[in-house]
Amino acid sequence: HVQLVESGGGSVQAGGSLRLSCVASGNYYNTYAIAWFRQAPGKEREGVAAIFTSLDGTFYADSVRGRFTISQGNAKNIAILQLNSLKPEDTAMYYCAVGRRTLQPLNGDNYNYWGQGTQVTVS
Image (cartoon, rainbow, N blue to C red; front, side):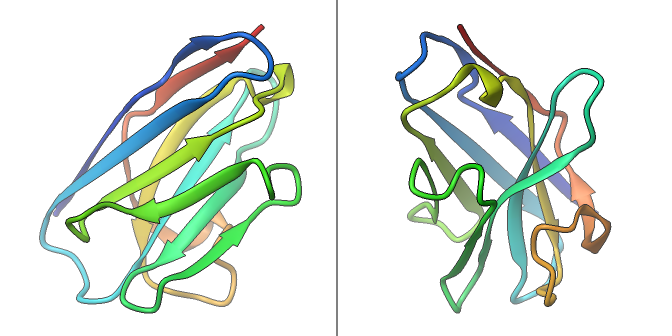
């Protein structure tokens, strides 16, 4: 069983920045993917960014590439999502997820464990 806890959400003005953190605990794969997804009211869930542990491969949605950066913390069970140059359309609940590494790292169907989410609001 894996538990994920997100933190760092909040309200910012357009152009501002936020730093989201995800801490994973429990038993999980030796090598895996950690990803961030978001969902705004009335919209489908969107894969934002993912990172492959041990390989340091990173993946981004076109909508956030160049503005968001995903990384691992000092401990490999921590994933950081740095959000820069935020836009009102980035407003959503952001979720952290863990799963196996696949050829579709931004597809939520490939993730088994999910956090409760942290709200990001950009005005």
